[in-house]
Length: 115
Length: 113
Image 1: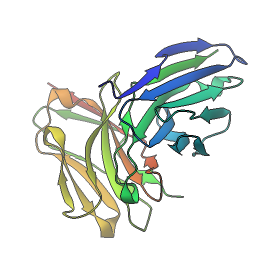
Image 2: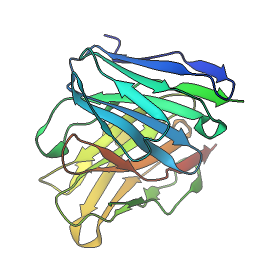
Image 3: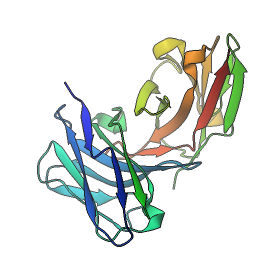
Image 4: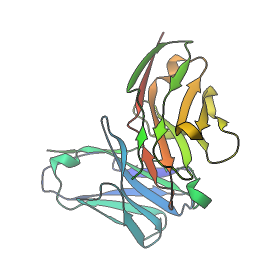
């Protein structure tokens, strides 16, 4: 049981390039999330999804797009990378629970550098 | 918008010392509270959670936390820390739908031998 798997683990991009980060979970979770982690700022929610075919904006969505075509996958796209998007990106997933009481399970992260 | 405050940014303790990390949140309604730990180079792992019942919750590795509603606090404690507890600790609050989490900025704990 792999849990939450993120690919790639590391990537260096040039400003203006595009890329897609892939998140896959094998726990049949309904909810999935993308966060970015920056020093001194904790984790901030970029986008999330409550089910296949649905996505919603989080706290810091600008410059990112997401898609959830299959329940187990949640893709994060950067259309035109900027240095400000240098960060560590974490994907997470959770069951649908009553009153937001289900814990989230996190992937190992993707370290992304934009030059 | 809700917020989560962790006032201790960097804590250094000797092994066997007691630990208390502060966490305060701003939301006045029903909340679900979590503490996550991130060991160096690893992903976040759940330490413990509170959503109802006994306000004193016990988690893994000897950690516990107390929910004090009147103080909007959810402090993490451990009676005796070990070198292996060196990590970053995040408090988080979930409210509303979709179990979205608002995280604090984290506390880096360094345990010395």
